[in-house]
Image (cartoon, rainbow, N blue to C red; front, side, top):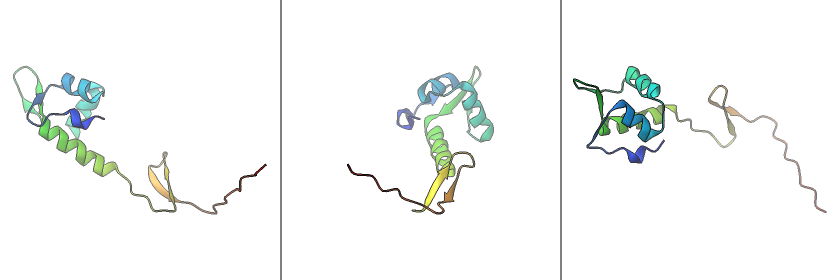
Length: 94
């Protein structure tokens, strides 16, 4: 996601934010239910750019996994797994 496009001192509607980050409006609504704070306006919900940037960086840190040298990342369980019995095949030269 292009976090750098979010301006700190600007407010965004749900539609503007979803277009800017290239995500569905439902994703923005889910983030709001998970804790992304809003400014309540008479017509629509507004999001402060600074708050959105902070929220997304915290979300990214929470989901980040650090791997050791002998680990692979499993897409199914989203964790690092130790590599067992690694066999390196030598390349045949002709």
